[in-house]
Length: 339
Figure 1 (spheres, rainbow, N blue to C red):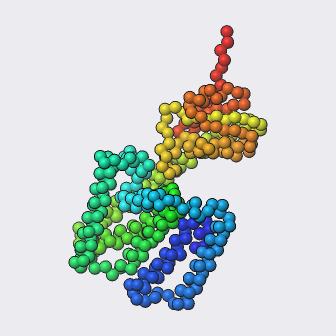
Figure 2 (cartoon, rainbow, N blue to C red):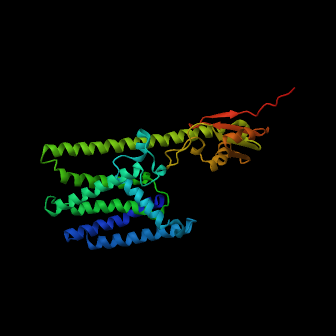
Figure 3 (tube, rainbow, N blue to C red):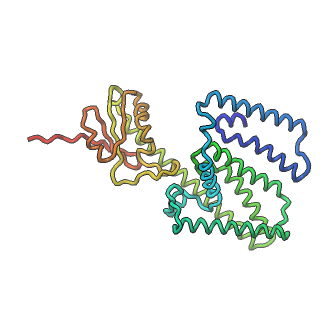
């Protein structure tokens, strides 16, 4: 656990999660699940490991903890996005790829917008479902001997999201894989209680259909997201390969690049909508060119398509028009006409 914490800070949630399991078991079962000696050793070891992590972080990470924590408004916005992503039965990137729906970064909420109406309907449906479930629980229709396990799984889903909300100002559903695992277990358990698939055939069919539909949705979303990441990587690789030229390995050269006019631009949502030069990064093109050619004397600049024709005029200029898939066409200097 401690080694994973050094490579991925969100792993800090493992420590309070283990303690929460012990507390929940004790609260419901009135019996401490492990010995006192084990509990003392576990608590002391956790304090030592977390303290060592904090000292290493404070010593080697040149970014103060105060500046790393986003504002309350950003936390609330990110928390809303994470909860919404967990509640949606279809992934936003999958819906955008298959049905052309807007990505969260494109949504403009207004009083008459269809997105707001759909979101409001889903929220009301979820509230109605919760009220119905609570009424059945109160009437004894949902006798649940697994409340400790359900509470732990729900706590786990919240706990794994908490570090992302508190310590990161850039939310992304990419980090929700562990939270999705917790929520899927909790949802399947509650659904089994409601539909009772072991007692009637209709409940069994409904349970299988719902679980299978969500499984297909999540699997398809994973495939689509990974495909988009691969597309981004292939485009970046093509651009860097284009920048590898024998003449650029020595001396001073000026590289000018621009996107091809009229082609689709990047849809900036995580890493899933990058196209063309954006897959490398406008600010990283020069570093990529220098690294690819092992020549720190190279200068690379990204221009607009209109400015590219004006920039490639010197003998030490090399110009490229970059397509959305990362392929590039070299733009030759204009030939002066003579009489």
